[in-house]
Image (cartoon, rainbow, N blue to C red; front, side):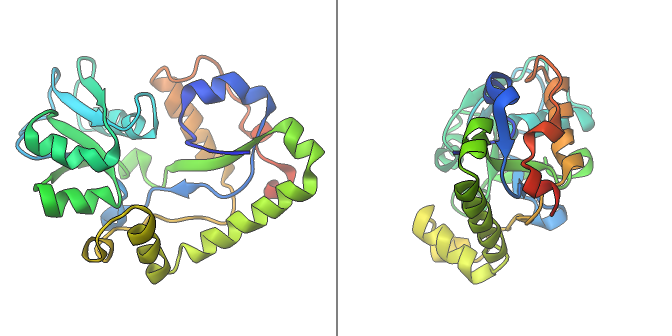
Length: 232
């Protein structure tokens, strides 16, 4: 059983015929509550040839950024995507190692406060608003052979999603696990954690991945959702 970003193309292509999603997706929120943004320090225009940091190529971060940039009229063909961990992106921006970075919380707020990062594009708005950004999966064999364990994990994830709606709980987790200062944690924009799966939103992920050549074939979204989750 594993936690996997829903937009890792190589993972989905490899095991799509035998994989089930277990529980709620984490989704990017809209408006001022966005969680993933394109940031810069001194770069004035996102034009081809620039270096943009992403935590992993062909992941949810650059997938949403590509969609948002094209929606804004940017030619993305010659963008040079470079990989850096989220905690390092603010420093890489400030030093000029990259021209822009696709950052998610809590590092969005941290980069604004400590590195002077300036938002230039919200990648969780417009066509990509409320977009699923992560989820939990298990192989079909595991689900079939371990129904009680599977349901126990699903119930635990549902409770965790409910707990994630409590602001103080999230702030404590950010401080303890992401090693972010309490002052930054209090300013972090929190995404939403639904307690049920949305088949339509999951299909949007597949469609966008196909558009940007992260998938080579169609995926039957319904076959990926565990039966007990379909009934919720």
